[in-house]
Every structure is written in C-alpha cells, then in structure tokens.
Figure 1: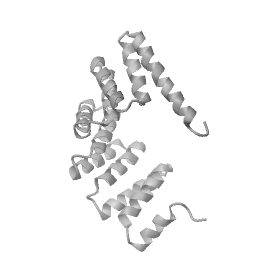
Figure 2 (figure 1 turned 180 degrees about the vertical axis):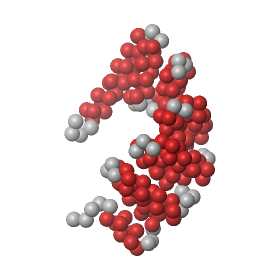
Figure 3 (figure 1 turned 120 degrees about the vertical axis):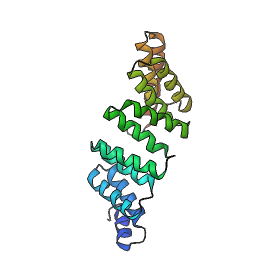
Figure 4 (figure 1 turned 30 degrees about the horizontal axis):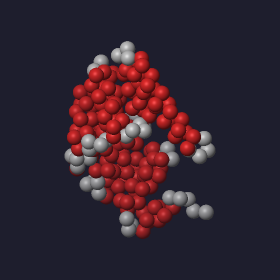
Length: 195
C-alpha cells in the first residue's frame, strides 16, 4: 500500500505543482513530528515562490518548535513583509517573542492581531496571560472575558480567568470559572471517542 503522502512526492517529480506539493508534504511531516524534513520542504516551496506568506508562517512554526526562536521570528517578519495583515503571523510572532522575553513587542503584535481579526479569541487570551504575568490583572480579566465571549467553550480562558480572580483574592469568582472550565473539559472528554 502506498504511503499517504506518496501522491505529493509524485507531484514533485512531475513538476506540476511543486510549491503546493512541498507545502502539503511539509504540513504532513510537521504533523508527524518530522520537523527537519518539514522545514526542508517549506524552504523548497519558498525557493520556488517567496511571495507566499503562509509558507513563511509554517516554516516559522516548525523553527519555533525546534527552539530556533531567532529564525522563527525572522520568518514571521518575512511573512508580514509579504502580507502585513496576516493575523496568524502576528499572533505566532507575539507568542515567539514572549518565549524570547520580548514582552513589549509581543504586546504590540497581540494587539495588531486583534485589530486585524477582532474574533481571534486566542489572541485575547494570550494578551491577557502576558498582562496577568506583569501584574495587570484587571486588564487580563477583561481580555479573558472577551476571549470567552468569542469562544464560550474555551477551557484555557476559563482556567486563566479563574487564576486571575484567585490572585485578586476573589475566591468565589475563581471557583465559578474553574468549575465551568472543568465542566466543559469533562464534557469534551466524554464526547471524544476512545476516551
């Protein structure tokens, strides 16, 4: 039986859709944990077409997973040079900047993400986490609540909101959000086959 990605390898040989094939093969390899091979395919796609911002984002994600933060940041920036409105590039760049400890620039990119895509719940959540970590709990709570308005089943936002209220000494509020997060998580687990 042929490997599930063999048709992409065939497309590479046929020279018909090299960029698309490299990107898809890179995605499959990244999903399987073959990060070096995935990065190689994204780089090959970019050699053929350097105007695809999403390929830069995919490469940057792989580089970040490999711990190559500076190279990841560079590729997110290249994606944004191609398409300044790529909210995923801004979001992931912000996440990588947080890992590197560059909070000021991370905050700017989370805010840019939200200005481009006001329904990006994860951006509100991560912005809230950064603010909470820097003692700005009231603003963090607002961002966590906004994330939940957008995505009412967002377990991580419930847990972050619970923690922020606990740190504020508001135990009843903390417990309320903690319980709701646990309820949603258990509901998901019960509805997931094989659990």
